[in-house]
Length: 219
Image 1 (cartoon, rainbow, N blue to C red):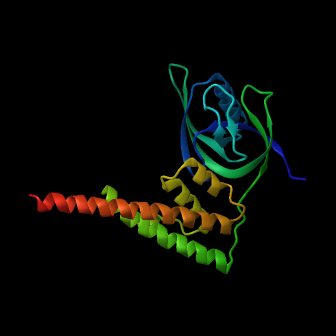
Image 2 (tube, rainbow, N blue to C red; image 1 turned 180 degrees about the vertical axis):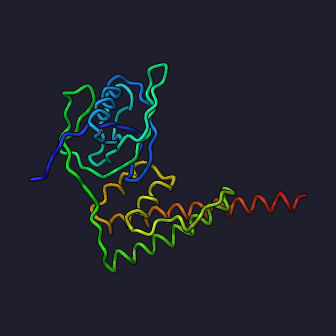
């Protein structure tokens, strides 16, 4: 039997990954209650991406895998809102939803990604890192923004999370990566997403250069 624990849930139109920072503007009464309780007990709440429904007003149906978030900063506003900074901590899987509190509660089990130091994992991580470096180089040219390639994580799991956080892909794609059963699956999913986005970025750069050359040739 899995070790299940109740966790307050915050359904959002976002996928939170471990290590990712997330600022939140708390204005609904139910979430003010939730945040107050988390601060008093120094416990996390769970951020879950919405499968269907809306962020505001209740009724949102979340995906079954989310990430716990710890509150790192709090600012109480004069109008009653609460601005908080949070950081993602660890994956969890929801087994049951409960509606007996002002906010949604999930009966969850921890769902960590097991670290696999195998030749296959190392090979996949090298592929992902190489693709990530090439993508950032192209992104520098496209946005005139400087990136430090040395800042790319070396650990395979953190590299997966970095890829998922950085890429401008739909929430469904990020959620699929978050739900990966193991590190190998997560690396493969990251490689697929990065290849797709790199292809789109190269196409955009090609069109940008073509337009630029036409402008210069007509001057």
